[in-house]
Length: 432
Ligand code: NAP
Image (cartoon, rainbow, N blue to C red; front, top):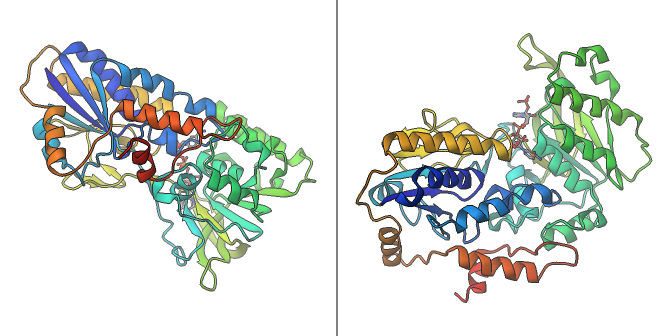
């Protein structure tokens, strides 16, 4: 029997487990570890609560977790409860699928003022991530700014702009729904350091902004190149740019505005004890398509600033780390140690991108440890003994089912679940 540990139960972890299970059949046991008693990682804590169809991919992951060779071992933090070196003693291979949960920093003065939050924090807050349940973002001013022109920036702007009724059917956590319902924010400025042709927003997500009940997206047509210049763009981007152009024709008579401010590079954040404004430098595109400052600056008022400029992986002791992810060669970090998903390639791509990624890394595992070969490592049995000695109580998929049932049972009418937002509440559900 071979034993594999996949660390992280988000999309990358589940697709890798699925691939390993297919490759080794009943010749291997695959344990998916997570630091929380609940699975799904990015699907639960990252994907927007009003995008339930995307979250439904978890049903596929349930099938993986229920297959004979796969187990979920929750409530175990690698690096805290058990080291990577210990896992390598217990398992034939260890695959780190820990995602990229940390916000990249802007690196400008004033970034640490109260009221400046990273998108991981803000998204975690409305998605019930225990680390951010107490974030309490300031929603009492009339202006917010979101830095970045990717899909996460869009998620943040949309969540800030929706009415309570528009969250029906979502699983946004109650504390965030109530706070947003009382929000005074009327203008959300989306700051892009480059132009409309350089956005990283996809058409479906962008299109949603045009159909909001109380908010309207606003663009300045002068920011756009002539329409013929859209022709050579790849189809997805061309569609996004065309949607953006269409925002100029929308009825602007709504309570809230989402203002696209292009060629706007943040240079400083200011305020008296808390954020009040962001100073922005006008840019032009340089010859390589990058943002070059023109020296002209202006002020955007904001009592909440969300930076949505990408994520980095959390380092783990003794695992080589550089540029926000683990140092790896096609997924291989070192002898029997691998990285997959965002921990391998950085925070890019859709949920589905992690499937080929997971299968590719599984192929690498198989190349070093052929299917059908035998080993003598102890896997889960050894891990559980070690954890018991440390007073760590792991959870399994049946435990998750109990938590899920309780969360479903306490849902608002029309909502799929009301998540618990604290580790101790999950554990209390299990009678611990
Ligand atoms: P992203 O797509 O990489 O976008 C990051 C944005 O931040 C870019 O516009 C980038 O501009 C900007 N940026 C980076 N550094 C900056 C700086 N110092 N100052 C100002 N702007 C800066 O990242 P993301 O939005 O976090 O998304 C991560 C991944 O998740 C993406 O692959 C995304 O598509 C995916 N995602 C998908 C969905 C969905 O499908 N519904 C939802 C959310 C996220 P430059 O281009 O100029 O660098």
